[in-house]
Image (cartoon, rainbow, N blue to C red; front, side, top):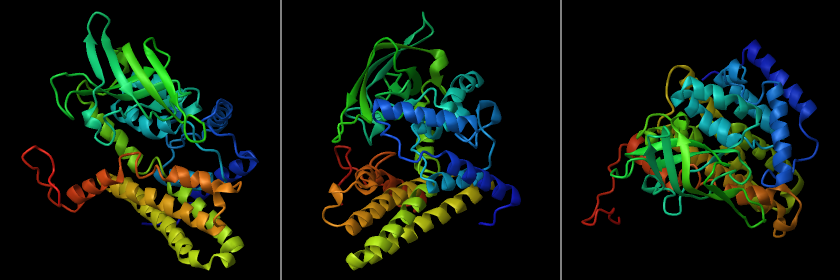
Length: 390
């Protein structure tokens, strides 16, 4: 792993840093889970796109700069260091786009990627169902072939759909073969959220904002052109999405290094009043640096032709627990009335608690690590077909 940047990479870093210093809003934007904040975040995405900074690693013809993985990491570090706004387009650019590049047709790439890069069209992730969360393969929403119209008819319900309250399009899995079980017979569909037969019902959070929504499908027609990947191969497509989500793309090290740096500044201000928090602050800062080095090592491996593989599960467990540790230390420094203060630490902590759940629960990720990296045996199943207790 070589952390020495080339002259070209240093020039890119300087350009990004200067642009962000000149353009990042002086005050944080309103929450993207409000109508006002949503619109302002879309404007920010358009501003990034005008400089080809919204998706730096993408091909130029769809809005990118064809930046290397190293340059992508550089951009992310500078972005979070500058305190730039959260990415309202993240479901599209980080989760769906890599799959469209890998599994989409040229026509799909031309249709969907440019408007994703500019933030004109924002995407919602529609995976979970009321009885299919971590066990996503148990989903019940269906897709029935409609040969007369050349497409599929979707029925069912999705829940906890990120960004669905205000988003324009969604992506998700439906069971296209009623005789199949679990991972087989699933197909990946793309659909406009204003299509006939779709009802979006916002889910209010404790703060009253609707960062999630339920989506109901009542005979929703989806043409063949909006099937992503092969019919019946949706699980493989979905796992490609999950690999990106758990791996490099969703939570870059810049996010945690910036948070750890803010924690150190808070320690300088509050540490004398809370010496018992010292070790937690040090551990959090070291964890952020370890994650950064792990990511650089992964980038080096990928640049040399390697694959992320099951290591993405290690990554996901680490960053989700690191996020909680950083914010817990921050709250401990602020003291017993931390939740009453006007700081980002409480909101950050509440959000961090969801990290071990989304992108595949950490319990599932630990199973993947145990079986696919450590080579441990699967838990034996009892007579009812369920795993036995240890």
